[in-house]
Image (cartoon, rainbow, N blue to C red):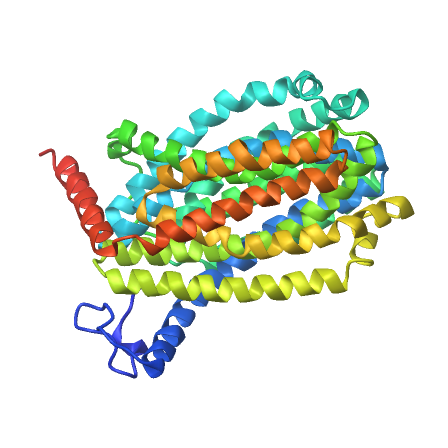
Length: 487
């Protein structure tokens, strides 16, 4: 069994004790050795995950590129349906599934492999039921979008597209839990290969359905469904056939303690969804501005580029979540703390590089998405905000990953609610509608909320007692074992 924890094979400087945790130490040499060890662990887990998530983002961007060349109305309708309906559901289900990062990661760190499979089955059950409750959102997409202030032509075209993506919704009940199952055990290479093959499949299907057969946005929806089920089936087959140590087959234990798991899932969902929906709300608010077709379409192009970079840091989010949960499960507080610090430092450096890259290419990257000169100018105008947002993106997902790893999603959800929706969103609406700054004002206000959230989370992280977090993890695992044994 490959255990993604510290071991002495990584230790050349006498930094790791008998229990696998770091020994107390000071000095630049010690810091460098810790940085080297943690970087190896971080990118060993985070590299394939980041590649996988970037491929997922590219799958969405491929559809956007093909639909964007159909026309501005088609691109706006596709963007609204994807950002408001599909991304809403994905954010909710991904958030609920991220409870597995806490539970499976800590169980794997403690060597309790049977728990990993049981938790995964429990998640599949809850996510499938959640998909059923989300169906009205897809069925009544058009009237809902009109109610939210979207243009009638855009809303009418968005509704049928959303209906056609219902199969993709149910694929998430399989793909998200199996993804978290594999990530918690650092079996991440297979995720990267499956998603890479799905990227190639999406490119072929969009070309076939949209360009060759002329199915328009219907072709984009069908391609999206097929590609997502390709991922779900591929991951499920690998889990069942090649993970016999942690997948022992279906068990009735998956129906035990459903409320406790659901409670953590809901806290995870709230935290994740407040992040995901924050960007979606940017599209909704922009859709109610004057000249909304151009504004929404240019914003969508920027959001696609933003998503490429954000997905890289979501990979590091998953990696630090795995590291934190594994190390807490094994009782290693110093390793937990040092892995967080190294991840934050490297992420911030990458964010600066991404910002400078966008500023250098601000007049050119829109050509990939549209032939419209006015749209290209609008994208160039927004690129400065895009570049600054990328720096914030490099930090915020790391804090979310830490929260997931130690199971304190509720606290972060409260911070996100206050900063994003209590301050950032109202401020953005004020700048965009009242001050008449348009999409620039909306985006600027929302960036202000991200800055406030980041500052608060930095303060919380600096005051965290990691020895206490180890105790809480140990107590959780002991309660599960007693329940499992019928005590």
